[in-house]
Image (cartoon, rainbow over all chains, first blue to last red; front, side, top):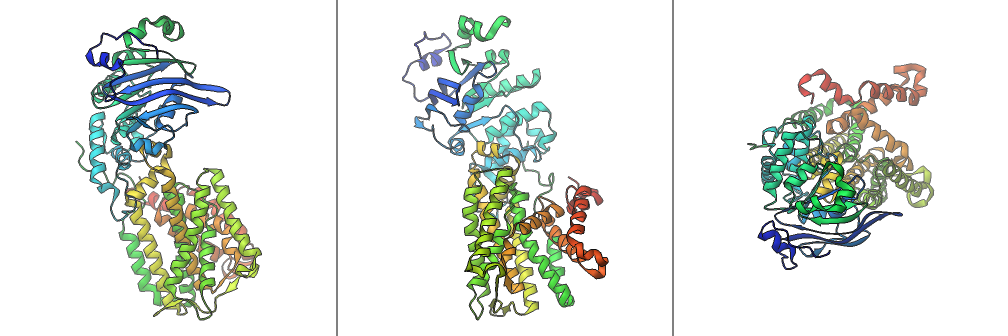
Length: 270
Length: 327
């Protein structure tokens, strides 16, 4: 990455620009590349996720954003490159082990369990941390740790009142909230959120952004999102991808005025 | 604020324990009054219920549709016969050996087949079952296509399977134990994870579950329970042949759980009973006259009609009659 003048956004952001802050850097991605046959879906992407920061990745459809998330969460293997979590190389680690290591993700297409209740959705996700599958004499519903994690996640996501409803009967916005709540129930440190605001109304978007603002104090957040207003409101740093490659990374104010970005992506609307 | 999780919102896999327990007690009390034909038919239905329950763990609880489940049933049966000497064998030892043999094969089949999914999984399980079928059919290990006879039925002290009454209660106890085990699993963390895998495997992996390991565990356990049913059927019939492992047998047990209702333990038992009774009635001249010669045809038609009218199985019929049970 080319050196960039420190953005006047506060001491913490400025300090992070240097190399000497491994404490806040949770996830580091170096030269990550994924090829599908002849197509390079993600091309030599390098980025860092820091505690206390919402890092948005924007780009047109097909820019490789979802492929990037899938590689970070372990659903797709990287062709080339390195992913480290807390300094440990996790590039070839199985998805479930990354999840247990603190990498949580939500999906662009809602992937809740529609026939279970809202609480059961979260309890099941939380159960991954205390699996103990051989204790068949204990009921899953009685697992105190999972219930506590599920309650906390529902509370945080603003779904506590809906806990007993069958998840499939929720409104679209509430299903998106549940998607994020299930991710939180696994108590991750890194959140990879794939378009959490897709299809949400203004009020629901506000609520989700408030939640993200709260969560970033204790999490490193990667946000892939198409809603530009929301991105510029919440993001501390923005990476712009075009055709699988990063064309710019910086603070929102920088990105907004970056001529390359304006030509390639933001267009006349901004 | 949420304090406790909801329990009644969704029909659990296990359902209330009361009805199955009452049925088991009723069967135990009715045993002596059944007569030789009734008791024998009942034993047959109970063994098939264990077999169907073991498949329900895979299909209904985990979402893995296997078309090779009879291999484990047949292996269990062959192990019982092959491990019995000319003076018979110990029932408990043979039961455990049958389960271990079937579980061992399930471990191999599962480890390989669970890397595929959907229709490929169905085909791979079928292929492995046919492989086992031909091992017994074409090699002298199990007497070839004629099968082998059991000289003396297994016994363990007073539990002598040569005694028809004892056999009835042994099979009933095995069925009750299988049902109870699966009911416990249904409400446990393991069962919850299996249900999650059935509904959305991708999300389970993202949450941090080693999905492959869970599926393999379910596959091996299902194989072991099918092996138990196989041990019992060998003890009942006193003879085994390769047809026990045949694909039509795998198909029949799948039909039983579809007929009874997928995803419910009761559905497996009801399906096994209904299927056996249907087959019994439709192949008896006294009941259906000359049509009995074409029982495969009439059975097929009857099943098509049932599945068309009751897409959720016979268990869906109960839900339709009493609205309290509808989800």
